[in-house]
Length: 379
Image (cartoon, rainbow, N blue to C red):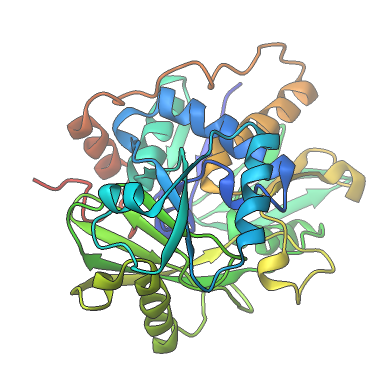
């Protein structure tokens, strides 16, 4: 297929480049969303095989503190077993060997195969792979309008670096938290409920595994280990749209305070930077559910809405990005009569073994996001 990708900014200017950079094992969802947990562990293994220096295979710990419900820990352990996620219970002494300075009131911990994603590298490597296969990629090319006639998208007006109307046999709306805005241009329904979340990166060298608080998802329950920093996250506050929203100091303060319950030293560590991201939650009739909104992904075939050659891929997580892409492209292939099978689960990304090459790709696509600014291009 001949493919054109346009993005209104650099390739990591959206949610992906403003995430906390956690490569989920699926354990976070194991007790509440079996399908989502299974998707995560499957993609976790694939990404570790294909992505090289786009990730760090750190492992992770879910920690139960004195005030945490032991039944929740047990339910998560059982969920991991059902989902096929390797999970091993370790006592406090073992956990302290892995994470010096972990909370004194640690009761027990669960080892899982979490990891760290460097989103800027991962996005750029995927773009380079697409380009190697003939795709035309245009950063800084915002969609300005979508023309629909007789049940077909007949053209997409693109500004910026393109300044032209692009025609295509099939159009995929893969715009994350902005999916509803694109859909409005095309006159089809896509109900998004974006929520903002803050990430705080502090000066903290030597943290090994990702730390997760083993309780119902709440503010400040994840610490992601970078090389010389630790990223603390996050909050979840519904916002009216993905572009303009408040960025409140209380979110930073609460995130640091809650994460310090797991790793007390982060409370006194120097804050290097902080940033907000907006989750691309798909939530028809679920506007008030907040953290209860599904983190799974949805492929919306707008033929059902009267537009035959348009689909939207919405929701999901960075960990399941490849699976989302496979679902969308399988639909396009079916519509266009292309019989080729998806091979992205088996093919290593270009530059995966060469961090300098990956960082060159990031520069080529203006792909630097906030999440890994301490790592990408660093000496």
